[in-house]
Length: 476
Length: 90
Image (cartoon, rainbow over all chains, first blue to last red; front, side):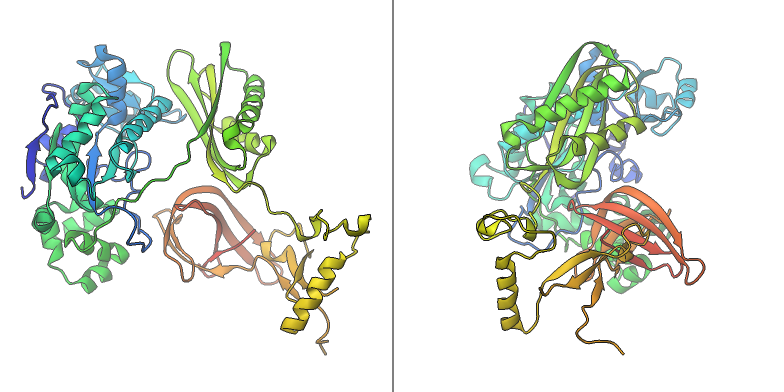
């Protein structure tokens, strides 16, 4: 392998406990399949390699990728250490009656249990299998904690799904020392928030650009790091299998069918041939393989969410009660000082369930709003479509995304001195304020015509959107 | 004869042609508005179909209300008559 592989100093090894996704590393990663590389699995995965807008000044070229495979299952086992030596599987999130397996421990993997299998199949393969309900609220909280502690190292931080994060390391050499020391520093930071077994399972990869860093992390063994320097990037990538490419699995499959196994083999093809076969994906795969495309780590901007929660004295299953509680939570969250001056564009409703586990639904609001009803209504609809599977002990609301302070006021709604109420009298319906009339006159003198239009209803109930309203030249 | 002084109506929400990449189910996964960078479709909020005016020139459209990766919301439709994609303000 071209990259230097370093044992992480101070990180205890975690022998004897393996995980389904770890097996790829222990047998060298040329054997990993496209699904093992987890590009497309897990929330937020696949978001890291989008075409970045051309802003060369932002972001960090030197990237460090920290990756904790099967992050969610590991968190569960940290919570219930007694299960560590048993066959365990985490159920996939969702309310489907045909639940499937999401993540499996190595013991369960040895028994033939695989992610994606139906529960009935999994149990028939491993009768002692322990099934765990997912607890997304717990996983998200752990992710937030992890990001918070890493923010102290570098302000350029870009999460890519749970358990995987990119850190921008440009300019940190003087502060933290050589690249291995920087990696060590990052892992030591994780010790502050995670128990040793979890940190020991972390893989680290450092290279120029996110792709190189991710490939390096995927090549590292648990608890180790792979550091690839600028000059060794191309030979390092050249030996990597094509299934590390962050493209559709079908593209990888076709490349393999064409006999192209490594990025080095791919890099020998002329760009037009690849574009002819794979379109934009062909261009991107070549750029990544040859090290020409270096995706900077982009700083992640996420406003701090506003949270409100309500604990019930006894678990609640009645929808009406939950709706009432939701209304109260929205009111409480909206009245927080942190919300003032901002409207809400996204919210998330979650719950801690009776007997363990959690549940949540999310909504993106159509328009920014500060109205209780407009925030609560879509959450109620989501709750109806995906109700909590068990009685609720605690209901939690998070206002997650925010917009401009308030909706724009209309030109005709002005209440200032030169507006609608000018002269101390109310304007009649259809009457144009004198100030507006003067403004139009001035614009006509300057431009030769009135550039103002009025929106008129043509067929407001039409199913065809362009038939509903029209602009009518406004020339009072 | 048309009167040049008569105020003209300009329809609002006229569809704009866009370039869309779809997945194997025909759902949009990437959208490129004219002159802009392609954006990934983060989520599909709603999907519906319109079939109208069969008595003259049939209108048959499949709509998607999507959220793009930069947080913007966009309404797209595929004209089922010719397969072309359009973005439209509702």
